[in-house]
Image (cartoon, rainbow, N blue to C red; front, side):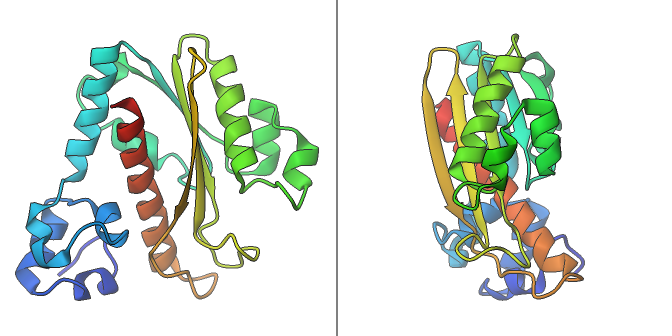
Length: 215
């Protein structure tokens, strides 16, 4: 079967029918890979579209307007949200700040912090700074989420497959999250499949966190 998921994802399911349902219905890959979902009952999972529609409905009910800053997900969070009808009323947009220099140029993230090995571009400090400055620079937004992480290969020690997220509101609510990806690390610089799987997992798990914070 041709699918957007790596072979190892299908092998974890107990039979081909369950894998087919998993792929065809875009079931929540993030929840499965995190171990929160039993693959023997994959058909009962929450599909991705349910998470996306939940975010839209929560924004509509609260009157909040959402803005994003994305690094490791490279705009995929925004791309998924953009598939939801009516989301433009509540979704301001996303800044894809992939490189450190772009983080500084677009969102005024301190270069010395990005170069500091104790902080750096993949850290809770970085996601926090992104969210703070993003909300300040988007006056029509009322809530900001930022994400950064290292998908591999070649991650610094302790950061392989680690994703950091931050949440801010105009009413000074704030929260942080650290996500450890479960998908295998890319084994070399040409390992597109594993890197894509990690990026997809980071995107879906970050969307789940957005949905939880808005609830």
